[in-house]
Image (cartoon, rainbow, N blue to C red; front, side, top):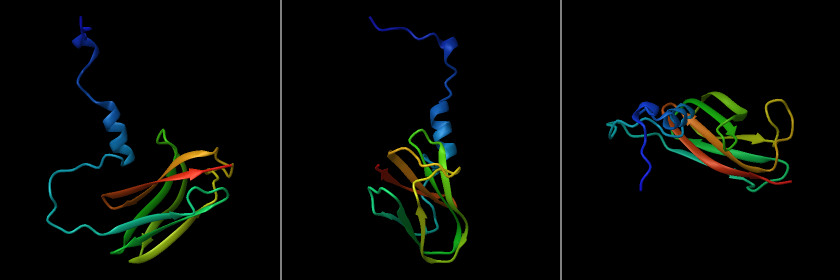
Length: 128
């Protein structure tokens, strides 16, 4: 016997997807773009890391970019950069600390680079 779901308890709104879209994890897509996308190459080394890691990225075109470190719940741990960049290679270092300067606990973090409507992410592993 399958459990029944009371329609009064569910309004059909998927709040989970809304929150992840807000974080940029599910970009809004409306079809194939007529304009070519700018290339974003996001890397980090070393990874896993103990004291610090350097996150580097290559931008094919100039533009505003935001680079942040997030925990797995989607909470911003530290914003590394947020400004306009020229085309080319750029880098930022994360020392394993949060925005308040306290050492973040060991674990898996997400490094998110947002460039206009494009987002790229990589996993970072912080070890003790």
